Length: 100
Image (cartoon, rainbow, N blue to C red; front, side, top):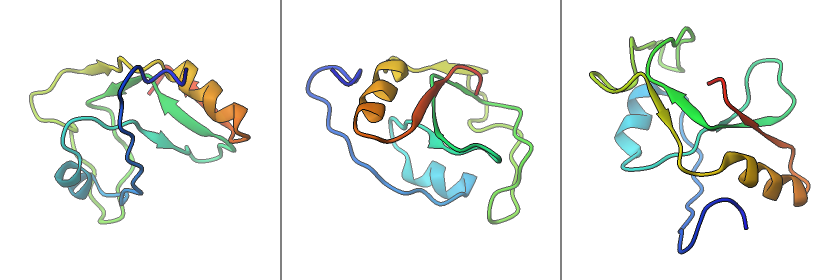
């Protein structure tokens, strides 16, 4: 069990570090797997935040929010702790994060 449930198709894509481009590409679901500055591991976010961005993307853009009029937080139904354990079992250092 990788924490994804039954009958889930996983498509892995490297996304540009661009808020606008990412919104054009992502349709229904995305799992954020990233590395924060100074971090030595990948982090899987259990909760996404709509506001509070401080860093500019590769195009120099920093939005007020990800989705205008969207909720402040989105909690993933995917069990990121289980997904992280699955990665760790394959030798990839991935940690779940609850403080997006």
